[in-house]
Image 1 (tube, rainbow, N blue to C red):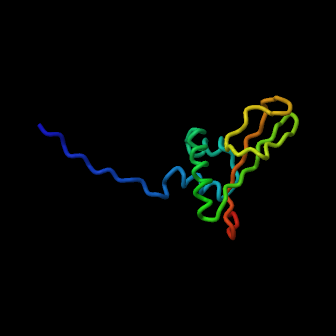
Image 2 (cartoon, rainbow, N blue to C red):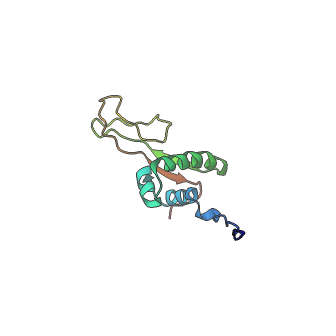
Image 3 (cartoon, rainbow, N blue to C red):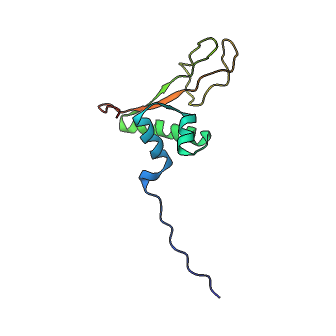
Amino acid sequence: MKPAPRKPTVPRNAAETARHAVIDLLCRETRSAKELSAELRLTEREVYDHLEHIRRSLHAEGAALEIVPAVCRSCGFTFAKRDRLTAPGRCPVCRHEAISDPLYTIHRPGHEPA
């Protein structure tokens, strides 16, 4: 007996992708990777991968992924020169590991957040 023919798969709409969901959320308000992960039901690693791609692709549109840097909760050191999107593990000044997460938002010139 022959197996039944498979139904063709229907690709997801581009507006339904996880990356577009991240962009939509960040256009509305500032969020951390942990908040994005919880809301979109993705792992933090996936969120960071999407953020890296978004950072590169927004440049072509004239928009930018803005990052509020992480801050040490013990001594107040700000990680202003950090290029990586992930949160740092420990403070270089006091060596404490109590560090706030960096926050992300998308800024498009000429567009006001909703």
